[in-house]
Image (cartoon, rainbow, N blue to C red; front, side):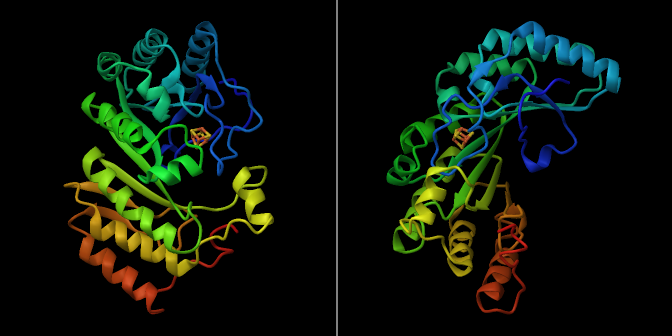
Length: 290
Ligand code: SF4
């Protein structure tokens, strides 16, 4: 119930109670991300977090969904996270789902047994910002892990039994051939990782970030609407994860898509081809918040 700084959550968590267990992001160095620039990473004292859960009980009475933030709350000590999960399920008997942002490094710092213990304690879903499966691009955006490590982190989360929601960020290599050349590597990674959800978002510049400054200085060119649609089309054609929930309906995207692959592949491709030929309406830059 007490919050420090701006709080971010995945769009699908709009109905969740937001429990701030960590402040900021332990990495806080991705070139495109400005979410936690004003925060110095720290884990809140456990007593404070448990107090917040009691305050939420007094205020809401009952909760069905909880999202644990900030940026990579999974990085906090496993024993403390388990105590938080126990307290949440004790306080809220109707609780159906507890979810969390997971950074790749915060995940890799845990053992497979720790992740399984977290799942058993009721951590149901992790959101992982994969961004891209391309090794060189992961390095360029300073993600803090290479492609092999990102794949390992995702697979560990899946193998723990958690529901894995991956986020891909289109446009991070900028306009031109190098951008589209990254997509096959992203597809390959996702097909090996086997997440339950894939959300494609499109890069929008964020002030006070390295990539924003590169744009201002003419060192980085944003992708066009056509390139974003072509990349989405490549993803839709290439993703081979049975029954995966695929979305590109975030405000940053030109064409909102939401469904399941492979079932909705043909429908998505028809829409994407229609948009590429100008027959299907796409969002304007203003509509995308630029
Ligand atoms: S790991 Fe996530 S929250 Fe942290 S800087 Fe990178 S994108 Fe932002």
